[in-house]
Length: 378
Image 1 (cartoon, rainbow, N blue to C red):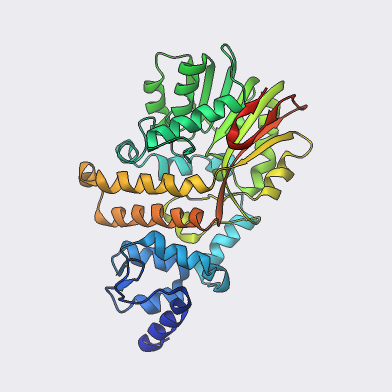
Image 2: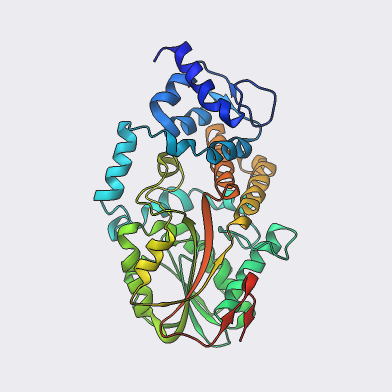
């Protein structure tokens, strides 16, 4: 498609969303390279992200730009079948890209890119998942509130043994051990996370291991998985639930904290998969329930997705405010990539295209009633 025709096509696509090219409003896009139009038409969402990273276009409010894109469901209306996207589909459907031998890729490609980055962006406890803003005024309070909410939902008591699958930098393990007097084992596939978590929890009854979840065998009173299920993959949802089942005592509880989608998925956006979370995908309600059928009783499902927009915007504010502290370790292309990631994801939760669920499972049922905002009647 020639340049002028490509430009007109993009203008026509954006018009119903009230997005203008070189307009004056925060969500309008500013074009810095005239080759932008042909690149987007031929490359879809991957090209949109890559061209932003390379400075071909700008937008003062990327979150609002993507809010309009997602509200219009443009990504569903226009399906680019370019080779890179076909490859992503093939990988997700045919290959098990989250197999045991590939389990550590996400750690190496995302979580090991530098603790300094996450320290300037996240809360003091380095909790890299949705905060609980119900009674919170800032990110630290929201993350502490989330940790305590989880502890209360699963009824932690002193002396219990708790397994944390995907323990990150040890935020939950440290909080649960300090506040509730429990013994915690955390596992992660990130070397950087494991080393940091061990240091943070060195004086507590906490053990951190670099391990894949499929290696687990010991039984525990309680199990949590906070922001890790997104890396399991649809081919392994059943295996994951079977591992949790064999590691959970008969009277135990399992809490799954995960991003979720509104429909079943077997892949993810090619830009996210290429640059942010390789081999990731978010489950739907049917995929989670199908994997748990015959193993668990679903005791409670708490939808917290409205809080992830605010969490991501807080991360973005911290990232940009503190960028000068780490800019010598990265380059401007990374800064633009990370900005694109945080703000596009914020828009996905703002438009409710993505959800965040906390699901509590038991093996045999419990005499506990859950009520709104996670408070418990026991």
